[in-house]
Image (cartoon, rainbow, N blue to C red; front, side, top):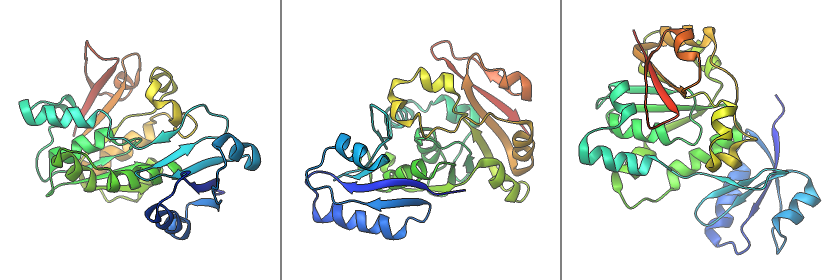
Length: 265
């Protein structure tokens, strides 16, 4: 597969740290074909017009991705993981943690990492003695989320700790699962990025061009059953037929358009 070609530049007023990070990315990132551009005072529309490519901006606190032809940017943010972890620490409840029956020391494979909010919550649940591996098939998304998980600063230390302990792997989940030995992780998690779900979520605007709309297949589920020791968990739109198609026991959520399902092994 050809590398994605992306312009790599800095924010308008780069610090020494920003320049150092840009140099590190340009020298070490092997999955993206970067064209490093001196920003000077060029606007993003001017850069888009001149280079006809998507742009990755190294900002002071994050990476921002500006897709060619899109109106909004994409950047890492822990999003709902922030209030979910705080709420869990207050009352001991989170729907995903409960349904996946996560405990300290467990291993979790998140096959559809995306922005990583669910992975952060699961990482908090399994703690430092556990492990969460997140798979992301798009090189740009994987890079932005990997960097974000390591650099984002949050006032609540348990959230920071959960982010720092997630391992991001650039991989398509079927290919990855085929390489795994049998019964090697406790829980496998799927949150398929269906177009209906994305189109209803305005905060995902910048992710649309990067999203993987590959549906969950019979072969993927079969491999997941082989690799998981305890259970497989699925999150999908309430109108999805995946729960019934693959035998997941659905948990309906009246206040949400997203339902969870579980396959006990």
